[in-house]
Image 1 (cartoon, rainbow, N blue to C red):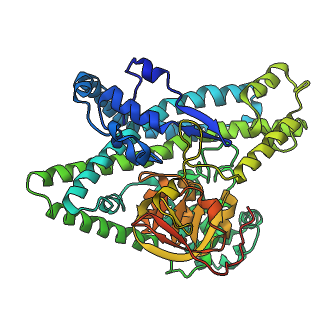
Image 2 (image 1 turned 45 degrees about the horizontal axis):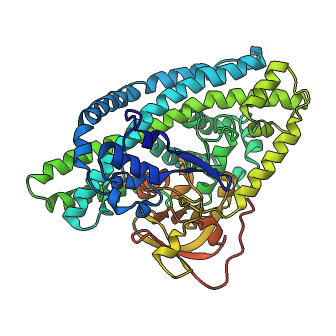
Image 3 (image 1 turned 45 degrees about the vertical axis):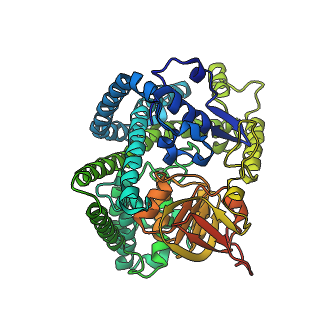
Amino acid sequence: MVSFAAVADDELTSIQWIKRAYGRAYLNEGAMGFALNRAYGMPAAMAESSMAAPQLIPQELNRYRWGTLLRRSLTLIGMNRTWEKNVTYFEQQFPQIDAWVDAFWARDLSDLGEQALWTEANGVWYERLMEYITYHANVTSMATTAYGRVEGLVERATGDKLVTQTLTSGLNDVIAAEIVPSLWQMAQTLRELGLASQVVDADPSVVLADWRQNPLAQPFLDQLEQFLQRHGHRCMSEAEYRYPRWREAPEQVLSSIVTYLQMDAVQVDPVAQAAAQHFQRADATEMVAAQLDFVRRPFFRSSLRRLHRLLRLRDNGQHFLVKLLLPSRVLYAELARRWTEKRWLQTADDFFFLLVPEIEQVLSAGAPGSLDLIQVAAARRRAHDYWFTQPFPEVMDAREQPVNLASEANDDPNVLTGIPASQGEVTGIARVVHTPQGTTQLQPGEILVTRATDPGWTPVFSVIGGLVLEVGGQLSHGAIVAREYGLPAVVNVAGATQKITDGQTIRVDGHRGRVALQAGEKEKGRNET
C-alpha cells in the first residue's frame, strides 16, 4: 500500500474517503483500489489483505498500468526510502516513549488546572501520538505489501497461499506475546502461596486491597507491579479513551488470572504453546523452500525475514502507540472526575460522550452555562447503545446500499462465510461478546464471537477454542494472535454477532473461511453484556 499525498490528481482529491452510516464510519475501499491503480499503475489486489471486500474491486483495476507505473517510479522509490527511514527511526524511539510515559506516571496532577489538563492532553500527548501513528502506518503498509509478496511465492510453490499463515506465527520478541505467559505465571504463584481460592468468585478490587495488607501476598504483588510497568497501559478496546487501563484498574488483570485458576495448571501452558508454533513455522518454512528452485529459494527466505521483521515491528509499534494514549486518558479522567464532583456530569464516563467544542466551551467559560452536559451525554449514550445493537452491513455500495457478501458466497443460511485467518476446525459453544466485560463469561474451549479484538483481548486467546470476528483481515490482531495459539479462526464474517446466538453450537472452519450454525437446542446464554 502507498500514500496518495504525493499525487495531485483531481480524480483523487475529490474522493470522499470516509462516510458515516449506521452509527459507524465506513472506509471507501473502492476508492482505495481505484487510487492505487490510477495513481501508481499497480493492481488494486495489492491491497487485498487490508480490504473487507476485495472481491468487489472491478477486474479492470487488477492489472498493471505500466505507463503510469513507469512515470511514478521515482516517486515510489523516494517514498520507499522515506518509509524505510521512518521505520528505523520509529523503532529507535521506543525507549524515548517509555521514558516520557514513566515520567508522566510519577507526576502529581492535583496542581494542574482544568485548562492545563486539557491543553497537555490535546497538545503534548496528542501531537506525539499523531507523529508516531504516521510511522506506524508506514510499517503497516510495508507489512501488507511484504505479506502479499510472500503469499504469492507460497501459492506458486505449494498451491495453497494459506500456508503463509503458519509461516508468520510463533514470532520471537513480540511484546504482546509476553502477556499470557506473565498472567499464567502469576496464577501459578497464587497457587503456590495458597491464595488461589480467595480470588475465585470474589470481587477482585476487594481482594487486591486485602492482599496489599497481607505480607504473604507480596511475591504476587511484586509480579503484578512488574506486569503493570510493562503492560499496564493496555486494556480491552484500548482505542477508546473511556476505558480504564490495567494500570489504573489492576483488578482487571486479576479477573484475567481467575480464568487460569479455574483450569488445571497443565491445561494452559503458554511456553509449550509457543514452542509448538515455532516448530510448525520452521517445518512450514522448510517445506515451502524445498519446493522452490535455487533461484527463488533465497528470495523467498529474504522476503520471509523481512516480513517477520515488519510484523514484529507492527505489533510492537502498536504497544508503544497505545502507551502514548495512557497520559491523555489519565488527564481526561482527572478532568471528568472534577466535573463529576461539581455535578456537571452524572458519572465520569459522561465526559467521553461530549464533543471537543463543548468541552472547550465549558473550559473557556469556566462553567457549563446553558449547556446541560448530563442531558447531552445521556442522549448520545442512548444513540450509542442503540446503534451498538443494530444490524449493519459490513460493506455498502456507492449508493449506500448494503452488499450481502454472504449470500453471494453460498446459499445456505446456516453457513456464514468470511476470510480464513487461522487454519483448523473446531466445534463448540459460541460465546457472543459485545463488550470487554462480557469476556468474564468465557469458559475454556468456547468459541469467541465478537466484533473485533485488540491486544487487550490477548489473555482470552489461551482459553478459547476458536474465534469468529465480524471485521479484520489476515494482518488484523485477531488473525495474528489466533495463529499464535493455533486457534481455528474466521474473520470478516458479516453480522456474526447478530446471526450467531449466544450459547449456540457452531463449527469453525479456519481453512475454508466458513462458520456452520448447527441446529438443535442452544445452551442458555450467560452473556448479559
